[in-house]
Each structure stands twice: as structure tokens, then as C-alpha cells.
Length: 322
Image (cartoon, rainbow, N blue to C red; front, top):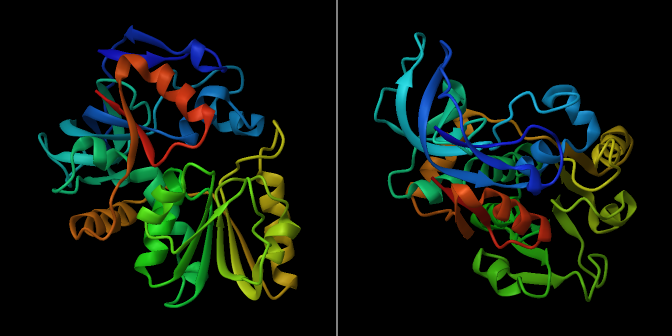
């Protein structure tokens, strides 16, 4: 089968289209004939091996799994001996590690039936980004109707879903993005837009009940100043920071400080869960959320897709069509 393979950590220049053996699913896995794969920051981290602390799980000297990709959507080719939820021919989406390939294995617990009203390309734009936004706006950080929500990095894959979900919950949403992303962010449901090249999130009288920070660039004291005294900050992932720890040190400081102040400070590392995929499936089929796609590339141009991601400011999700 054809796959995008990487033998060492580094830039997109190291990605190669090769013929490799088709993977064999384990007892609790399915083999998916991949029709589309998502391209997001999680793939960049896999490719570069950064932050370096992540190599404890990814592989110290080189990637344990040389095939890139994380999100996948396609048809079930075969199922493992213990899998009862799926059968060959089912159209599915979710976490398929090594999805930049014609076939990929997937844990049965981390995939779900594809939304019936979405193409494979649209469906694959949902899993990592959609689940991250859903988990960011859950529990104490789920906004109540009329509350003010600030989404930093609102034009990206996670940000656009956070805007859609917060607006769906009835919040008054402000999105932070670059000067070319304002119309797109408003189209996702934001009532207000902050152009970060012209103004700061602390400018003006507004303070926010919930802040979702996808960018990882602002110091914790600045984010806290933009919060209400009892507000909630959700730091998403490990963006920004140092090469070794990424943004994890900022998130750790936030979690350590949170019990001693009135504000609720969270650091979110999202996890793939079928229950969240099923929630996203229902919302998509009800037309309550829409997967925005920035660009679609063929599998052979995966390196170009990663380069486009690295340039920054995609509007929605970048997708590979396979």
C-alpha cells in the first residue's frame, strides 16, 4: 500500500511516499481503508518530535510508528477477533494512528460511525479538533447562555469548533485571529473579533467568563487579567513554550495556581473517546456544527499540507484526500 513515511524527526522535507506492507489489526482493532486524513498540530508534533519530552511516548531517537497521521475516515476493511461494534463496509471516522496511508489500524474504542450527511473529507475534520473543543468547553468551563467567551486562535481547527460550540450554548463569543480571518471567524458564530495585530485581549472594559487559549503565546498573567474574578481559563495542548517542554510548563503553572485563587485554570490534553465522537456525529447530523475545511491535498502532497500548516493561519482544517 502507499503511505507517507518518516524515518527521523524533522521537517516536512523528510516525508516520503512509499510502498509498505498493509497493517494487521489486533484483536480490539479494525483495519480501515482510509479515504481522508486530517492534518493538524498533532501531526506536526509527531513529525518534529517536539516538544522533546513527547519522545518518551513517540520514540526517543526516531518515531516508533514511521507512518504519519492521526485522524482518519474511511471504510472498515476487516475487524479484530474481539470487535463486535463494527463490520466490514462500515463508514467510520476517528483516531487512526498512521492515517497518511491507504490502510490504517484503529482502536475500536476510538472510532465511530461517520456522520451520514458528511463526506469523508468533512468527517475527518472533526475528530481531534472537534473533540478538543468539546472537552475544552465541558464541565465548569461549559458556558451558560449570555456569558462572554473568548476564543484565542479562533480561525484554526480547534478554535473554529470552540466558536461554534460556545455560540451553540448561547454564549456571546469573541474570537481572536489575524487580520485576514475576521470574516471567517464571524461566519463560525463569533459576535466580536479581535485582530491580535492591532489590539490586545485586555484592551477595553470586557472581561470574559471563559477563555479558550489555542495559541500558547500569551503569558498566564495576561490571560488572567482578561478573565472575570470567577472565570475559567482553558489552556489547550502544549503549543508555544520551550523546545523541551513546549507549553506544558505554562499549563502546569496554571493548574498549580488554580486551587489558591477564585479563577478556575485548566490545562487540557484531549483524549480520543467514542462518546465524544458520537456527540460530534449527532451535532453534525443535526447541522448544529459544520466542519470547515481550509484546503484539501492528495496523499502524495502531504509534505505541502504540513508546510501550509506551519505557515500558520489556516481557516479551519487541512485535509488529505486518499
